[in-house]
Length: 365
Picture 1: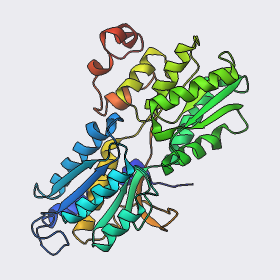
Picture 2 (picture 1 turned 45 degrees about the vertical axis):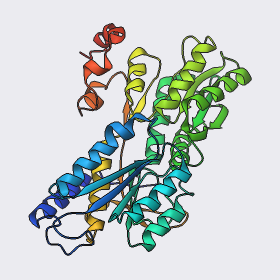
Picture 3 (picture 1 turned 45 degrees about the horizontal axis):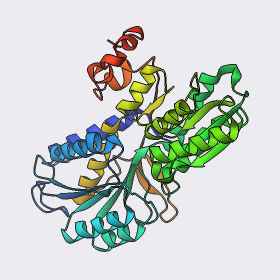
Picture 4 (picture 1 turned 120 degrees about the vertical axis):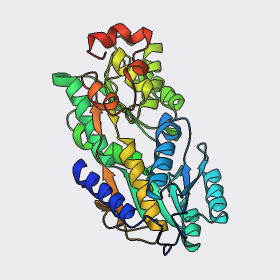
């Protein structure tokens, strides 16, 4: 099981590093691998653009933090793989050719990226695995505590089911087998659910795509019967949308509780509407800022000991220095104190005309 320190401890470590860099003039000393006066070049490779978070949150947050840490002199070179693992490998080659000082990689396929990571390492480029634990000789890793995310989802599902947990069947819609996070989410959820619910059908969803989750859910309804499904474990919000569409198409009413993850706008709106039971809000600023700090510090040839709060191991690399961050369950009861309070979404964005009356009813105004 992954272990992490609390929010305050991570925040203090991050703040301390920022102060230290600022006090030392950041990279102005010119002794680091990135050259003089903070002019480091950080390559940022994100896996796809169908999930809203990558373009809306991760990319701008990382760019902002790199600029802050380097007093505006650092540069982020960005590429998105659009869900294509081979394309991402080619993007790593391009980043190596453009002589970046460090790479932040959110891998499309954790195994496939290993060779490209090895090439970067051979070229003297530090690699930070972002959000997914890439294989190969990575230097650092930052993500959320993925097993804990699964546990949060599982606990919420049990809460929604109450004393009906053993009635009927639940469907488990896991993420893609190419993403090691998916196995950790499943493991965490299973640690809570096993022995307390009856799992009727379970699927690994190719590429995390909502349309694939929709197809899987339609098959589960056909196999189990629409009146026998009491809940659906969905590993993320995108898939939850496809699942709920399949349930509606089959005439399931009322909808069973469906979990999610990422607190995407569409997911939060479904929670308001009563179609999706919950999501897991993961504070992207903390993850993005940690990745930027790790990359800049490594690019400058400095130690990252003061940033990390855990070590994890991949199938190819043992004891990777890591920053792991906890997530929070989001239901109708706490939307205002989570994603709204943190500035992820405004009430105006969430509460469209169609949802205005419901938002007023739950105090979201």
